[in-house]
Length: 138
Figure 1 (cartoon, one colour):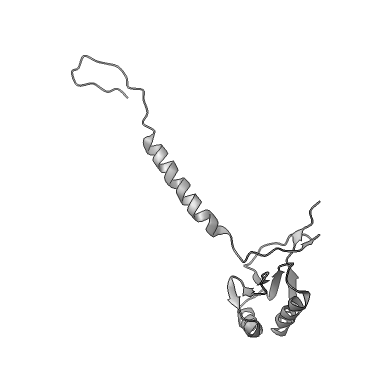
Figure 2: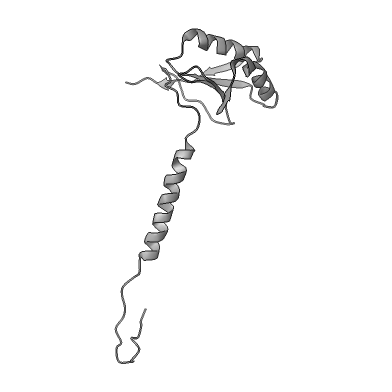
């Protein structure tokens, strides 16, 4: 692009590109990604046991029951009382085509409590219960 200085005698080309708007846009995008990235993590933080199993296909949003290290129960991300678990799962499963539930429990949760929660899931009429684990470290 050629620019004149105003007096008409100077015919030099101005070769400088102003990159300040580009830097502004990049910084705004960086801030947006930094703010939204923590929101992308989902679920309740649990320390899963390890097992050797294949990964599952993800066709439909899965129904996940989680027990955290403090023995709190979650259906999806919603906290749930133990005595309401069975009736809540019945209501959810009636509206779904996939009647499978995935169960996540922290390895620090007592085995007896895990068995009680699994029994409540079965009482809700759920025939397929998948156990979520982490892969074995090699």
